[in-house]
Length: 307
Image 1 (spheres, rainbow, N blue to C red):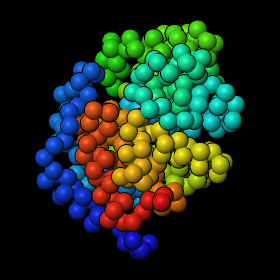
Image 2: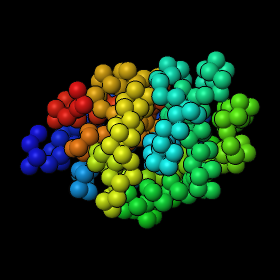
Image 3: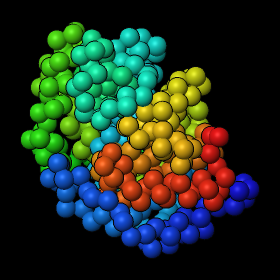
Image 4: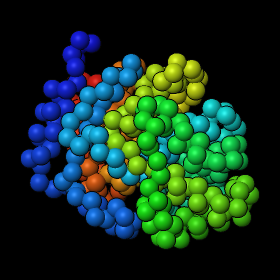
């Protein structure tokens, strides 16, 4: 694509193709508040570094961001702690389900990466220690970067997750036994469930992710991350952002990406644009079926990828 070409025709073509796709997966049924979503819903947005946004389908409809928020908490902690963060969480793909306990015991309470649940709990814990309100800090950041002051927590989703959060509680207590959690586990879990419950649209999340396309520069022109730190987050998104399907995602899409079980996926083309796609039907690994297909088509049609 040339710089004078807008993304709108590409998005419209993708939406037409997705509409004709029969299988869309199933919504996350272990979070009751998400189970009722229509798996055929679809929205997609592309944001350019200057804040121009293109969209198609239900691209302005808020949905549950879930694990997509892990990218932003990671950026906020990395900006504050630098490389000291990596003493508490690794940077390697897990190869196991996102809520697995198995690896933690082998690796002495140090999660494999920041995007599996154990790693995200560590990152949220460190942000809470630094700020006194991890979820509030995250919400403020997302409001500023997206330009949408109406973003907020979905109390129903947060309560639903808390009611089905035994595995996350187990992860938190297990890591606390190794001294890798600072805050009381119930406090951490409350912050984490609030963080995951944030509702945002494809437009909001594409804009909020744009600091990674701008190599660490926020929407207001200030620098959040160094060039190296922005590169590091993009790299971890590529290798770990879609759980134990990261290799297949890199193969098909060829972009740093991060999925959530609400059906959203964000992706980054460094220096060029950021994307968010939403469709709540998931595959067996927790990634949006239509979302992955749409991003696959985007990189194929535009030739934009990191490879």
